[in-house]
Amino acid sequence: MSTNTQTVTAAPAEAPPGRKPQLSEGARAERNLGWMLIAPAVVVMIAVTAYPVGYAVYLSLERYNLALPNATKFIGFANYGAVLSSSYWWHSLVVTVIITVISVSITLVLGMALAFVLHRTIFGRGIVRTTSLIPYGIVTVAAAYSWQYAWTPGQGYLSSVFNNSAPLTDQVKAIIVIIIAEIWKTTPFMGLLLLAGLSLVPDDLLKAARVDGATAWQRFTKIMLPLMKPAILVALLFRTLDSFRIFDNIYILTAGANGTASVSILGYNNLFNALNLGIGSAISILIFICVAIIAVIYIIGFGTAAPGSDIGKR
Image 1 (cartoon, rainbow, N blue to C red):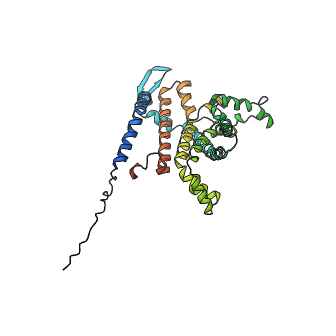
Image 2 (spheres, rainbow, N blue to C red):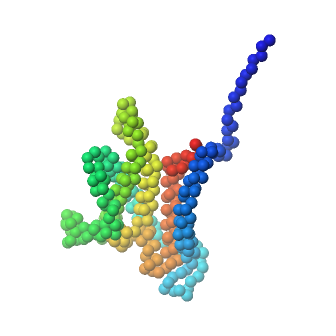
Image 3 (cartoon, rainbow, N blue to C red):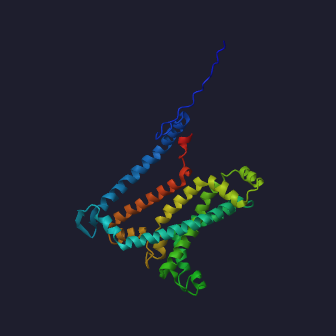
């Protein structure tokens, strides 16, 4: 009489639904190391920014005008209500969004093209890369003054080309000039960040795809873009946040006149010109909230392209 013996191999227990899978020892050690490395920077950032941000929040809840120091009074969220019900805020927000969307979109396309040129350059690569970064190396205020002079009727070379026109005196034309100045200044920065992501794409993978018959567009959309997602996220996030807080170019070119004021210009006018610290602080906090929302949307939209988001899968 023979006895059949069956060997049963237990499958690894799966995590209950709704509970995060347990990290391996290596992943846990890597996460702890990450927290240790960023801890000093986090402590310094909190120490430097916590008090100013907290004080700005406090001022935004006060009726506080330096011209009337004795009229200071706690009014809660009345400043926010005044800002959000004002047409000046919404007009400035629309101008800011228009400048941000158009400039960042065009900068992304031109930056990608610049990254390809810098990546494929064979001769004089160092000179080409250094030359392309010259606009980004110029101080924004100096660059804005050069654009202002170029469009000054009777003096500027660009104004003379267009029959001594004065585009900075017209709302739409002034916004176009501001966008062009932004694109010219920040495209090298975008190209540099995208070049870092492009250099991580394996050439062997592209050659294999070419052998399999993939077209240049298919190689770009199916191989390059997915592998460049983290670099694209960083580039878009930095440029969008920077463009949304635009101040220098507008302040030098138009000073916010003719309907070209951004939200930062509006906050500056209330804080330093009108000396209304309550309304100005409320505008600053609203800008901070908008920036935080943009950052969250980008990180959620790109998903696993966010650095460290795949740690739970290891």
